[in-house]
Length: 290
Image (cartoon, rainbow, N blue to C red; front, side, top):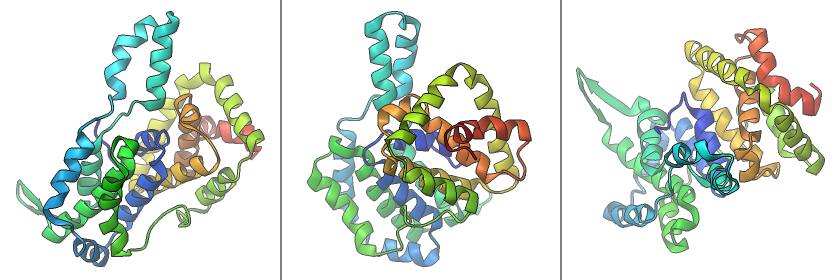
């Protein structure tokens, strides 16, 4: 699967199931906010040819994509063993990979840095080097324990050494409705977590309405030119999800999708039809009462 601005909820689904997901999200938010000055600073920390060895290490033991196991397992859900395999993959299998992460940073988050001449496009050389630094830092957290700690630290050092403003969980999205909800979620206790799980489970049979509502919200974001801030909001939600104490298991069983829908609706509340907003905001209202 290709990661993209439009598919921010899917990127968040992967990151919400990775231990390093919030760190990846922080790098992606930083890339999204980067300007020419940030690009120049990051490019100045480019590590050079050693990157090839880092990427060889990251690619040595790639995780099995989530989509590659679903066709084989889904027809056999009645079998307990097959069901267990599927459920495990829902927790650990990924929709995207390192190549998808690389493309996201270069082509979507740094889209403004590309030079176009007719059918030919090329990224500004400084931006291309800055993208290397950003991608390496994101990939180190994305790969997690699949790569040894020394390599991960080396991949992250150029980004940290650049000392550019980091857009982590301390940086608000800038949309009050989103920021208030994410801050409230981040301070969840076990009772709140249990309530989210219960609500998601109770609504599992009515999820057919969720996908069309998400499509409508995403369309509204696109036509109102809010895909970039909406991507930022989804990445901020990854951090809030982790701070709230939710797990990869919770994400796989629907809590991430429910939260992602809430964030998407909050980003486009002035344009979203009421019936679609009601579908996406229903889990939040059931748990938090507003």
